[in-house]
Image (cartoon, rainbow, N blue to C red):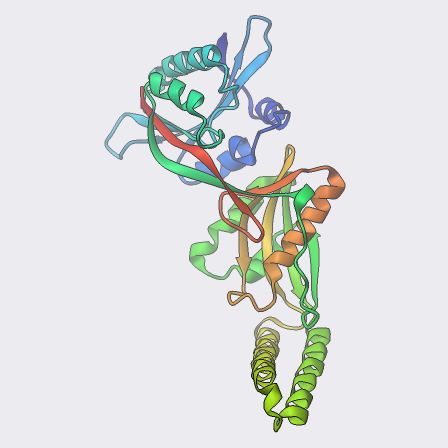
Length: 330
């Protein structure tokens, strides 16, 4: 086995060919971290026939301002067959030698291996790794995805665009502005799914539904048999009016037919990854996030992509526990 650095373009091409690769293991994510003071290194291991058998992106940062040593971090771990113990040991040994030359004192990895896989855990422990914390990834499998029932009183248009104009309108908090850089760094792999509210059609539907509730209340208000139903209709009318007033608020602050939610999607390798999301609909009055995910899953199905994932929970998702984050002293 030989281990050496490789150029960014070659590295990204090799990563994209791996079935379990993520955007977090490429230069597109490294660009985000380099802006925060990290140094990125792209490594490739080859066998005696010069065939690639392992890949690793490392992000290096000084332990402290006064230290001459570095900590190396491999987001989402190595791209390697973790179940090949001999290969994993060889790669670890060669990588350790390389990191010593780079004055790295500690390596952090996050293997994308399911929780409870004791064979991989046992090998890592034998190599000197220690588990730091649990990790999870959140997934929705396209083949089993079922759309939630849409609210007939709210009309949303879900569209996919390739620029950051929607994010710039929705992200006003300075603390959140770093997200814009994520989309910029994704380059050709970045997509924005936005939920645009049709104010006129939604308000018209809401007015009709409120009128129907009020008509029901007028007709049955003196009939004791409808006591429970009347209470339900009163609550329904109250909620409908709240949605109506919220739409008016959005119109005043954002203009006609505003975007009220958006997701930044990475379209890389064989998966769609939600990088971040922003949503004005904090009370979930409009089900905007669910409608976006519905459209994302529909697009994935058309393209043969089997799942949508994220490091954070999202609508419909299920949690997949991973082995966790491991650290080893070099």
